[in-house]
Image 1 (cartoon, rainbow, N blue to C red):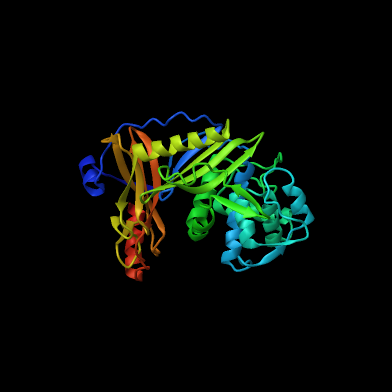
Image 2: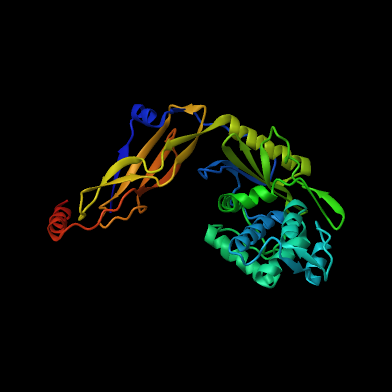
Length: 381
């Protein structure tokens, strides 16, 4: 296989993308075991530390429990109004740590269970949801692990639906970023319905959401989830929307409730202050045309199926370059949406990002004559 590259000149690059770049942006110091800041739309990791270190997630685990619950609602295997029985096992689990104060032998609606789990971080509510979906918490944990694998959470292992301590229950900041992004992307209406709730009452007991950044207008934070155990420390995934731009801050193992909030806010403020999210290409816009062999025509348009947005440091304007790579020979048939190249960005000589480029059209096989001619050309190329 040969790789053909097309390097944009700086002037052309700035003309095409309406930006230029200048120097790297130093991330703030974050007092936590592990952390990462993610641009939601592009999926870029703007900064991070020890993002692949396995750590206990505590109640951040409940993001996966919520993801599978929302999936069950979407598939109509559960309904919000449905009432399910609170088991003795769920009630006993709730006795350790955060709870919604469910009562064994009584029923609760799926809607109340979701609020209890998300707003109050109720362990009892999480277990009832797990049992309603999979029959048992053990079977539900197996579903959690299958879903984690499907999402690409390659360094995660779930043993329960709550995040209560277990030596074989772990994840990483990178994997939690993947999960939080998937929840926001796949269930935006459910996210808006539940994660912005600031307090919830059940069984005549009112509890506040433990995410203290929630409801502070200047932060833009509209969710996600807190977590704490002695081993995990104080953890927070904070999702903020300012204007049309969403950032996700994942902070694991801070020293206190106040610290996880302040460190998350520091990270979010840095991301909004020092980076711009720039739409480089419209969906369906051709970046270039690549040579196609043995096809009904000799070229195919290359680009992105959806808008391509890249976060760029505001103080890194003149040193960002792009190289477009086409893997050759590209043989027909070529399908629309097929990955046919890579767009690589570099900043000050270091890789800034690599993104797959897709075919914007189908190119079927050519007739026997064109295939024969191209076969001869490839032999002597």
